[in-house]
Image (tube, rainbow, N blue to C red):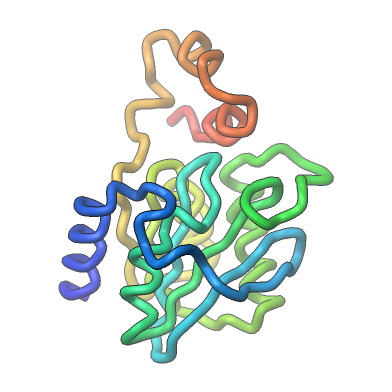
Length: 174
């Protein structure tokens, strides 16, 4: 797993997790359970890449392509992001996002244990997911440890776009 960590760190550092720095996007994918799942490559365990709040799976494109060359890699667009249709019910709280991820993986036939890689608020979602789905390994990139304790949390959240604000509001306060 040291190789995976080095690849993750290298791609995050050089690509800055910005959209469009890879080969042009995530090809294929399909809509399942109101989300859009992308998977490529072969080999176990599958590496799951969970995006930050308000971001589609496309932010993982450089790392996704790199990993898929040697093993199976997957990511998703959560409801209302990327290719996924808007959310019909429920607020995008971390616990709901984790349940949606579990339903998506089951419906897609993706089996664990998975190597979980979460960036920002995506790391919080994966913490909730891992509680009921023991992973092979977990890697968190820049988890928002300080956000729930921000001295003026309401003012901070008010500055965020609505879709991103709802996901950040979902972060646990402890």
